[in-house]
Each structure stands twice: as structure tokens, then as C-alpha cells.
Length: 215
Image 1 (cartoon, one colour):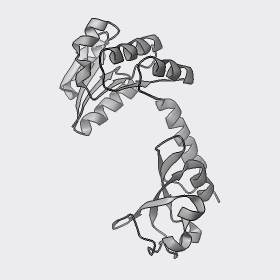
Image 2 (cartoon, rainbow, N blue to C red):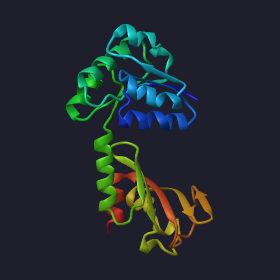
Image 3 (cartoon, rainbow, N blue to C red):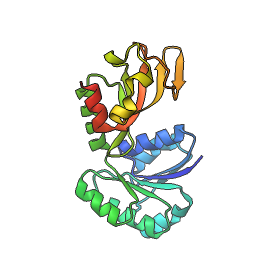
Image 4 (spheres, one colour):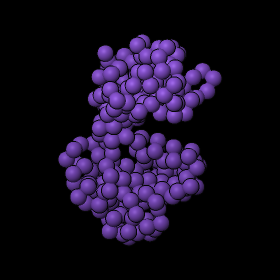
């Protein structure tokens, strides 16, 4: 269980905070809009109405006690920048801030943010990749270069073993898990034989995997 501070209860902030709670973490939510906090308060043990651009107010939250402080303010970039900077100055262990554009990310990273997320851009990119590839159920981006993909058994893999297909040597792809109707095969060995209905969880370079499944 970890302790998180989420500042800014727009749509992204609310989804983030609720999911953190579902994962059994301690979460403090903060927004200057009383109506929003009053609506959300029954779902959180700690909800504060305050303006975090005020250093005294921000300091009173005890920012150094949180494992991560999220700044998820959507429209007011100046406030997001000020809060991110002040959090770091006050001893926040890790600050993750939301950005809408590349230029915002640069300023945030220079002024307190340890990491920047682009929820709108990332969702749009993921949707574009998923809809463009015909053999793709889902994927998770690990880095700009590497991702984990869930794909069906490709036609020329059916009835062949992992060792025979040899995707690791040919494409630099690692097979992590085989999802089946009756369970999963975790880290399958080279003698595993692909079946038509298998869902294959693989990890590799995004461009290489997309090239593989688009053949």
C-alpha cells in the first residue's frame, strides 16, 4: 500500500484517483472547486478543498509523506507549473504532472516534475495502433521503443513450436505468456506448440512487432 496525492479533479484526475483506491492505496484528493470535492468526498477518506498554488496551503498537506504527488490540472497550465515546482522544493519524493503539449512537458520537467504524462496523446496513439493492426487485441507501452502486445496465433505459427518459429532470433521478440480458454501458460518453453485459439503475449520493439503482425 502506498500514499498518493492527486491535485486536480478533472476527468483524468478522478479516474486516476479512483483506480489508485481500487488498488488498495491511500489517496488524498485536492481541488479548489468545492462542488467537485463534495461530490467525490464520500468515495475518499481524505479530500481537501484548497488552492495549491498557495505555498502555505500546499505545505500544510505534508507533501513529503506521499510516495508520489500527481498534478493532474487540465486547463490552467500556469497553476500546474507552479504547483509542480513547489512540490519539489517542499521535498516531494516524486512528482508526476499531466501535460497536453510537448512544450508544456519541457517546462514541467525543467521545473519540478520527475515525469510527464500525456493522457490524450497516449490514448489517441494507442487507438490508432490498435485499429490499424489487424492482428492485435491490445498492447501496453513500456517505453517509446518497447511494448507488450496481446496477439492471436498467426496463421503460419499454427501447429508449430516456439523453437521452430524462432521469433526471438528473427524479430527480437520474447513470448511471455500463452492465454488459453482454460488457463495460461506462463513463460512457455521452446517445445510449446501454438494452437489456433491461443492469445500470445509478447514483448518487443513496437515497430518490429507491428511489422510482424501486419504481414
